[in-house]
Image (tube, rainbow, N blue to C red; front, side, top):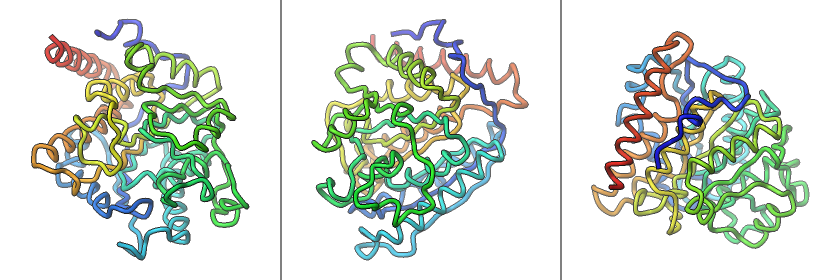
Length: 343
């Protein structure tokens, strides 16, 4: 379906941001889940010229690396290390937004979002979060079936606390996300307690049936309208690649069938960027070691880069009309590609 002209130019009444500097936070962190291969993703991004591509577009980039002290089994379920890493990432994202830079965090597993969003909330309590994921990631230590940290970051961000777990171990986490300013997209594998948490807090959730019935264009209109009515003035996109159907993105650790298509995956990001209010993004759970063939690896690398480059676009402060023309050209290219693939 071709994107409507109204949606292409619509700004939804929220704060319009424009950047020419970007903070790249590379977080090769695997502390949140069992597979160490997820630590390889940041290196894959740099080896495939992410920084050079951004600078060719005109971005002034600042790279920061956050690494864990221990790797392998000794790092798993290390509460002290999880808190330490999260606090470092939070400090970087908070300072990034204070400097009015776009903030891009490349994981690593989804546990990094506790720090990235925790820091952003220090800068802006009215932040809206779009959580794109096959899973809810809103378990607590007592409800988690695995004990893996990558299934818990939203519980901490929402302040869902068992026995003062977050209060006692994450004292830096002093700002919480308003559940009305959170939207799930692509979720299709929830634990029973996660479902209860979401229903009790009336968090907006967009499942695959709704995406398939309405189309991503209408979905994103509704998502942004919802966040606007909740008083959100800036948006953060936390993108777990397992939200995408495994046929399009095979290199991830917890794939779930019947996910978002490659076209819709890009369209989702583009829709948020064109609001002018997308200020930050996480890209997580890309695990190069789990690609079964070179074709699978290349497909996953290409889509990862497309997602990130779509989110950041071109720097806007000095680009002016030129940047908007590039937006239009990129939109028509995406539309032409989509139509050619669906004839």
